Length: 255
Image (cartoon, rainbow, N blue to C red; front, side, top):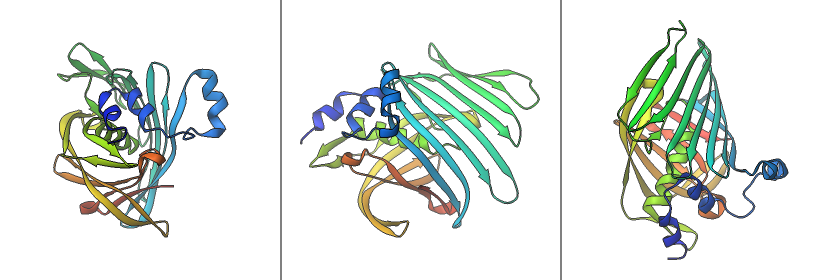
């Protein structure tokens, strides 16, 4: 299986990015700038957020690989006609795949902040809510725990990359996964830990913006909520094109 052994060797975040990024995948507009900084943009863009077919928001994101740290930044803006929200986040992951830090900031409807750091076998949330009464919430979790915040869909793409790199093989530019994989997660917005199960279901043809695409269909079960994700092949960088929560009529589509 060509490349399969290499894919299984590394569970570190930066190793995953190196393996999944095809030649020329770096955003050429940013190549000179990122080269100077010793970093590489692996994926960037935006997702449109739809509920019952109506667009209610946009998440803009960037996933960047540096010499020692991988950084995922995202900003989400939602307006469903009744309420508005604007939030941003930054996650940093070390070469060994462990969490270095996670920051979350809300501009509206209220201003609030959260910062997560790893301490021994703890992940500690430092919270600054709208009333500015700071508090700490410790979680007995290892630093290998996956951050999967409620409102940032790019976090799910990073989780899918981890699944594909650690539980699957690459064969003839296709991905082959023998069994589901489980990951421990922390949902900072809910201050809750849990477990998700990720499973490749196979190939699936779907319509995206009026064009039929054949993609890898992946199921993600999280605390009783089932997500479906459609992901490109290795030559296109395993990019998530579409996500859906069928039970809630939610769709998230790459712009």
